Amino acid sequence: MHRQAALRHEWLADLLGRRPALGPNGLAVTEAPLAALDGLTDIDTVMRAVETVSAYFTGAIRREITNLRAERATGLSKHDWQRAHGPHVTRMLATGRFPALAKAVYDGTDVDSETSFATGLDWVLDAVAAKLTRPSV
Image (cartoon, rainbow, N blue to C red; front, side, top):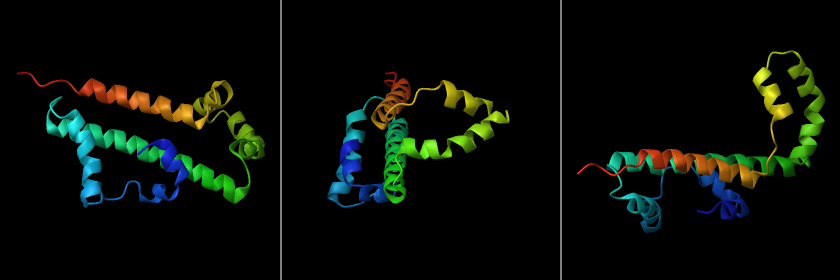
């Protein structure tokens, strides 16, 4: 499944993460990544790799769709919501209790959701690739 397709059909977020469908199409969805990684390493490592990428995709898409739904429900864009809560967050950060969060808020870069998704996926795929080594013969 592609990110844009999932975002166009928000109801898919409600299905993501459930037990897999066991019909021919559902089984084909599971078969494809397993077949693509077949022979790279043992089957247990392949299964964990597929589960890891799937978990990232599911979590990222669900978070993004939840934010889109909140925007529609409140009428506030992400930036409008941040501006509305800015004074409260500023007061909380000024207490010194949240130094790492303060650094992220004041020094971090706000990126769009597509960049955030792509960067996270790259990191997950790099980590998975590091684990997928060909078995010794």
